[in-house]
Amino acid sequence: MQTIPKRLTLVHQVEEILREGIRCGQWTRYLPGEHDLCRRLQVSRTTLRAALVTLTRERRLRSARGHSREIVKVRAIRPDSNRRGPVVLITGAPVDLMGGTPMTLMADLRQQLTKAGFDFEVHAGRSWLARRPESALERLMRYRNPVASVLFSVSAAIQKWYMSRGLPCLLVGSCHTGVILPAIEADFFSLGQHAARQFLSRGHRAIALIVPALGMAGEGKMIGGVREVVEKTKDAEIRVVEHDGTASCLQRRLVRLLAGRRPTALLIAGAPYVITVLSVLHRAGIRVPEDISVISRDREPYLGYIVPPLTQYEIQPARFARRLSRTVVTLAQGGSAPARCQLLVPQFIPGETLGYLSHKNTSAG
Image 1: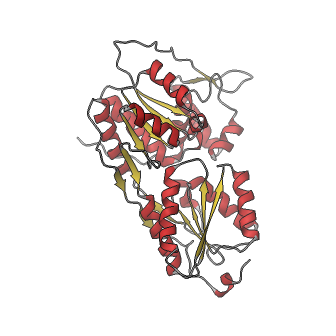
Image 2 (image 1 turned 180 degrees about the horizontal axis):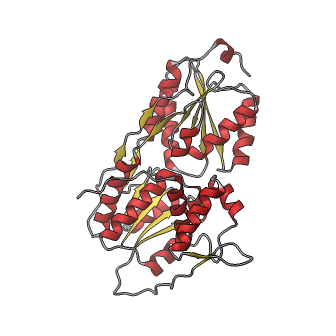
Image 3 (image 1 turned 180 degrees about the vertical axis):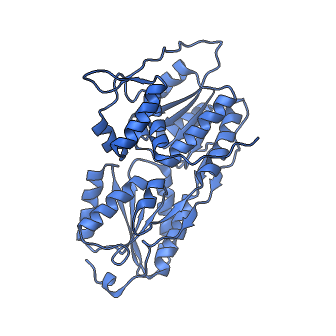
């Protein structure tokens, strides 16, 4: 009988984020305090406590008087030459900052690999974005001996290392220049073209792209798609605003952007950054979409609470998860991934944050 996919509740998403953080060693002895976790995960204490109860019942956590919840130690598995290695997922994105879509992908991947008889490990954190990750990769290969690797939000250095070694891997995302790896990626180039046409058809000629400067190839492809369309239009221009992924840096960049010749349209890469952008615009008294139109490149469930409804793009998580899990299980079993990149075309979700240029917009700034 075919399993019916279930919609993950917010509590279930928090549970999975905490499980992954424990599995990958993000926290060693104790979890951070409830106030800190609520701030990081952007959830209420009621939601967090419901997730903590589940993890306590699973014996992943125990209460400790005078301390935050203690992580129950799991006996480490020593390397065994006769034991089949795990499938590892390497990501430069901290687990506690991942949205619902990446967590859905990882949950489905873990489930399908478990059914096929494979262990699954997540190795996450910004340390994987270091300029020289070679030593860390060598250690990972030596001590874990994975049968296959999944690369998600990783740098060009990691992609080149895997390409040079010829190790079985699948990249979730875009290849950097000069890199050829089996990959499943969102067609961000076409998305950039489509978003640019949406803005231009509504009269916008001053467009800004808000992107994290974390060395991800997907952002470059999106920028390239926007440029290709905008550069064919007279009197239109784009500005690329890069930030380091923190709210404080993004706020400073936006304040500087708005102080000059104000753009009338924003395309934002990364769902968490949409909240910061809209907050800064609100504080500055700038209305959406009357003064500035906004499109989000990514969709996450929590963005559905934004008013007015957000204009955005979506890759259906269930479809993405099926394609990813099927390919990774094949790799782990000794098969090969498709030689050509598997492109997933994002779906445009109309909203009320995309409007037509008014006369007032043209004189702004």
